[in-house]
Length: 81
Image 1 (cartoon, rainbow, N blue to C red):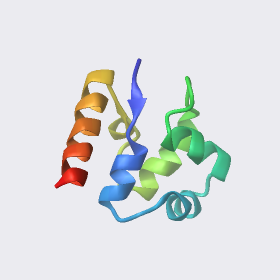
Image 2: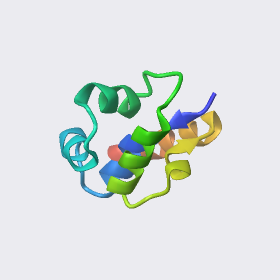
Image 3: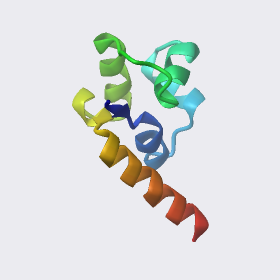
């Protein structure tokens, strides 16, 4: 199953969840689900809005489970350093 990396991309751009929600013009509930990967499907229109707010392409927000795991491990290592 694929995962969304919205949280990781937003963090790199210095945006928290509330800031991205306002910038993208999506509901707080929708962004919360996408931010934490609490969804099994995405609305393309909403994903496009979020991608635009992050200056990214919608496809850039979706990665494989393996890549997501690697990114999570990298974040943990950076946080421990």
